[in-house]
Length: 350
Image (tube, rainbow, N blue to C red; front, side, top):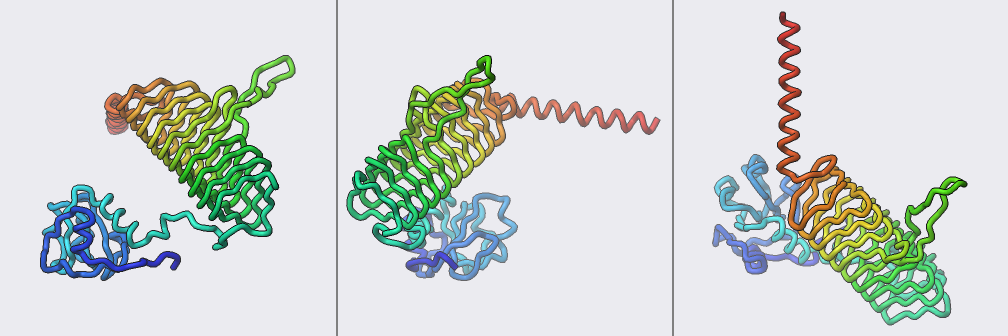
């Protein structure tokens, strides 16, 4: 309903674009008119299969073409063009971006172009050309916004903040005490630059620690809906170039995240943590304060990280430990549980 393909493409063109091998040369001229999953495919669509677990869906597949491994080709209907690929998901995404470019572009939320007369913009604001600012947006003193940036409805950008070029600031976002690079995407409801959860005990209970740092978001970062990024207390909170953060993530004060990390939904990163480059956190990972996580690390979903993790390791569990150790312990506990259950059954029989 909302996204339609902007072009059609032949199977031969798909093979040329991705490097996939077309198994049936006589189907090179077949047209692909859209993309779909294996579960809702129809004639004219392009789909992909990643492994044997999906082979039960292939015999009756209705589609124009499929990215798959060579071992699945013989299970396909003869009229479906098989594109043999080492990475079906990646190649599928490449073609999907070609057919649906608007689905990955951050455009005006209300469909507006230019600066709405219903936005409040302080006279000291410095705006480059080709900027869209929608109704209800509030732009404070001395803010700078680069060309090609879209500021959606009801956004609040506080004084002295700087936002780079070709950014997208989604509806309801608030930005304060922040410097934001080029090509950054902040989805709806993101909160940037509020003070962190910092308190000190006193004879009157607890008292707030002043947070006088800022937030620095480097180029091409994407932050999902309703994620929060606290400003630093004495140091800056930094999110590295190309990092992608899912919805509903909490990033506390003084955190430093390296380049090209992937952080899934519901993660909580406590104060003063350091995360290296190209590290991946599964959903609902929690990291205790002041922990250092290396580069190239993978942490399983729902893990609780209490200790530093060296570069390149895979950890999981609560508390998190190396994945092989964690899985051995889980298997041992399962064995104890199964043995106990068997012993109880034997007792009942006696």
